[in-house]
Structure formats: structure tokens, C-alpha cells
Length: 311
Image (cartoon, rainbow, N blue to C red; front, side, top):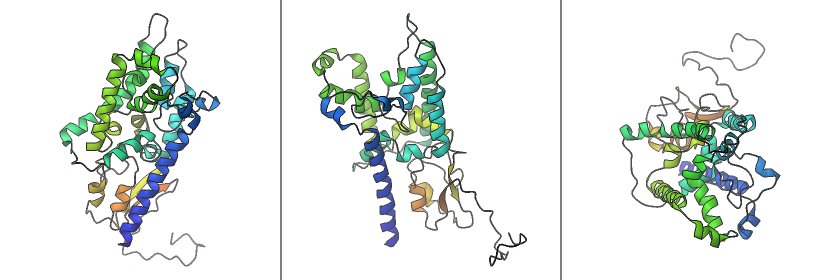
């Protein structure tokens, strides 16, 4: 009973962090009231998660949108700031950003809580699909560089044709509440219709499948996943405490093989595996070196720290 209470508190804590992160990155309340996009100096700062620049409440820039904007500029300058920001977040946290700080991750989590029968994607389909987000990430970087118009300009292709977070956070609020919404309504065309369909598919998919956008489509998650192995924050399995019951793997909604590869590219560090472990074998550490395991038949002296023979 006590463990169930602690588990619920930890889940509530994660949800609180997600809500606060979403509120912080979309804290320009006046934007929603006036239907205008905030364009102050903070918009030059990239937020950690996927959050559309065009959302009326957004106070910063989405890293993917910022990267495409720079690469699509005729000067074709390499954006050390944007790439450096993504790398900094990745090195510090890895995909913990996906689990705790991404607004669209929160949207998917809430949708999945809707009580409906859930779908389980077969492994032979799921595994290849996981690589799609890396293809999308590569295209998000390359298309703005090579696919340009006669003036040397390029569109932010991921934002324009695919991103459901942009449709949900930017397109729909501006269409409903923004200035010139009558004009926008008249100008709705096949691109917006296509993006609305993509959003609908992701929304319905999120109800039935846990975080389908994160698993299969998100280029930002793909970038962050590359840092999971060596980010400052790491998950660890204590082999001495682990009984091999695989309760952690049954609890993982991202389908990570926890006992084989706990810091997998797919792990979003949500903590479900830690909460499910009956022996407390799974821990998370930040810049904390793992202590070498001692054999069960060894006696270790801890009465003082003045000699090195017992350490």
C-alpha cells in the first residue's frame, strides 16, 4: 500500500514538472488574448522541447524550427548557436527532455490516459519504424540547404508539412483567435488540410499507442537520443539487487529492453521502470560515478577512511 502511494506521488511529480515546463514555454498569456505572436528578444532563445514558434503563448523558439530557419537562409551559415543548444541539452539530460520538458510529449501522455483499448505494435513493424525519426531529422537539416527557390530561399519543410505540434499550438489558435482570422480562413488550402490530417492521425494514434510521434516521427527526439549513452544523467541497474523479474520491461511504455540496454536510444527517462522495480535495483544518477560492486564474500571495512587498503 505504501509503495503504491509513493508511486502515485512520483507520477504526480513528473506530471507537475511537465505542466510547469509547458506553462513556462507558453507563458505569454497576452498572445492568446490578442491572437498575436510574441516577437520579443526571448524568441531568440531555443527552448528544450518541441514547441512551435508561432504558438501565441510561445516565449522562445523551437530548436528544429530555428535550425531550419538558419539553414534556409541564403547565406547558408552553419548555426553554431542552435546546434550547440541542442547538443548542450542533449549532453546534460539526453531524452529526459522528452519525458519531462516537452509540451507535445505532455499532450501525448494525456491523450493516452483516455480509457480505450490500446494497440500493441508488433516488434517486426515497430523496430523498423523507429528509424523513421532519424530519416526525418536528416531531411529537416538537408532539405533547407539543397531544396531552394529561384531566390535562394528555402521553406522550413518539417514545420510546414509535418509538425503536428505547430498545427496544434500555432495554426489552430491563430486561425481561431488571431488577427486576420477571416483572411486565414479564406486562404486555407491543401497544405493546412494535410497538416490537420497529420495532427488528427497523431492525436488518435496517441490515444491508442503510447507516444507514437516520439517513437516514430520526432526529429528533436532523434537528436537527443544520440546523447542517451553518455549524457550526464544516466540510469543504472544494480546487478546485485536485480532478480531478473522484468517488471521494469513490462512497465516501460517505450518498449525498452531495460535489462539489456537501460540507456537505450528510445528511453525518455520517464521513471516508470524505477517505480516498477520491486527491489529498487534501478537508480538514476547525475554526474555520479558508479561504485564498483563488491563480492558477497568480501568484508569491507568502513570504520575509517585513513587507509586505502580497504577501499
